[in-house]
Image 1 (tube, one colour):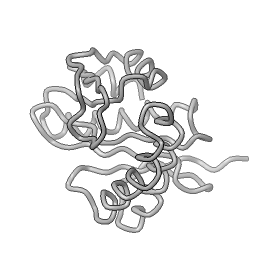
Image 2 (tube, one colour):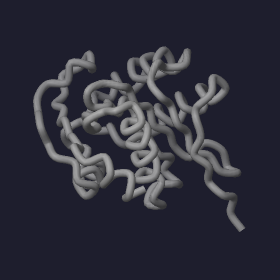
Image 3 (cartoon, one colour):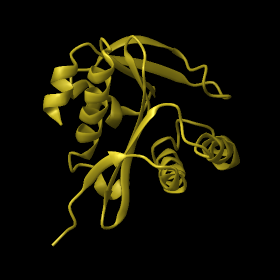
Image 4 (cartoon, one colour):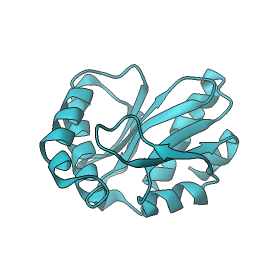
Length: 168
């Protein structure tokens, strides 16, 4: 019998596991989308620095008896910004991504945000399909200023938080 999955607020002691999951996800999903040399030391250094301290964003983690299954970081704004959403390879296809997005949408609603948005790399087709199936609409496409290497990003927005909340 498996362990029940819990989504809870992230804590400082979660940061090493979050950094490791974030890096593992990038290594798998972004291979072929980002240069190999960047995925090596550049990405690892960036993520180690990113997760060295607690973010100002609301951070939620999903865990089961096997450890960290996924996480989401969401920032307050007119529309809340999903800074990161990553699910461990073994937990994909279980509804965890939907549940984490629903948790972020509830947080955005509690903050009084008008919607939720995120960016993803062009070519990350599984994530693109996943988000669009949950009602995301493309509102921008262009060079991603957050990467030190040239990549194209897609902005996806949800104006209906209730749809995301219900989907989770």
